[in-house]
Length: 453
Image (tube, rainbow, N blue to C red; front, top):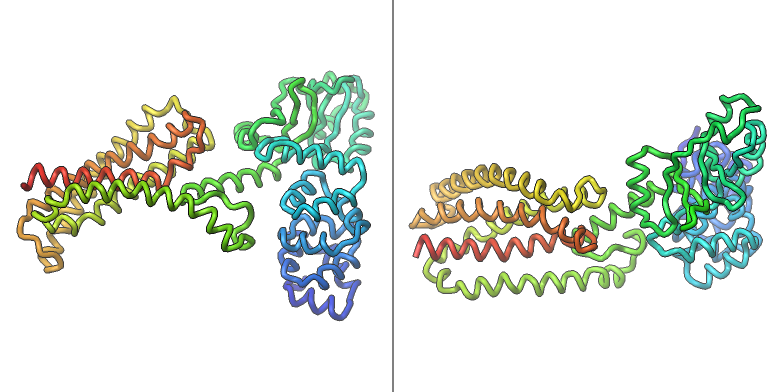
């Protein structure tokens, strides 16, 4: 098989080798094809999707970048859109149209059939972070009195619209979810056996209004591949599959990293974000952190007399602040992640803090000894000019205490955020560093005033 690249597609499009293009769409993975055609220009993309049958091009379309999808929707006729989208699952349609400009959303909704349009509108009306917004309304449903033979016939009939047929769900006349059964169990059973006798009644499901992150935790806990979604009356309204949850996990992790770095989460991919949108996402956070850092400046200003008496104090301030801040961030990152995936609960606060205090004591001793030795080396090499070497003891003691304080703060803030129903990531990163900086400076100057003056 030849290696795919954008030049190959451009040459085949330019020479109009339609048969070879169709063979590529038949033989190669849809993800690989999408990766190599994202950067084609509008005319090339349109030609490609015009000559490739929709049953082959539809899956490739779902893996294109948002920009490429937007180009195509803009160029497609209503009939073109209908041909491609009728081969795509409803949740995948929702995924890409919710990021389209309003005029293109209207164009898509006008182009698809009434049934799909109603389904798409229904999902779009769910809150953005809810399970309902990512669920698929295509699934296989059976009745308790179906035989295995009848069940297989229903699976064949409904399977085309279902994103997954590994499990079928048993509902009554009112669509209340009563159980589920695996396709394997149906196939391996006698065709005359009744589904009601074979189904599992211990159902794990989620509510449509629950947070998406809850679904990801359930998938992980129970090692599931498909999860039924119900409403308040326990009526089956959709399913979530593992690939939907993989997107959620990636999105949540990305948001946490962005928040921990002192930025609001981006609305899309970084490369698709404008300079002004990046400015808006970052300015507010930087402003807050700048204002909060004023407290550190106030502490230094109030301690000016100490600094005049012992100018050498300033030499070691960056080392102290950097070490303490990094120590706090180490803990914050781990605890924030633990709280996010619910391996750490608010009830664990005491255990977490006690564990981090013990870690901090060991780190504090180790780092203080290293810092003390390094300061003597710098003095011996003539890098620093310090006459009163008792300052080295103050620096080492400050480092020891500040590491302990930083670890306690780093362990406590994410749990406190969870307790206040805030995103734990908000309390991470820059906020911890800013708070620890202020406390470290206050501690450092306080010990210097107490022990050296």
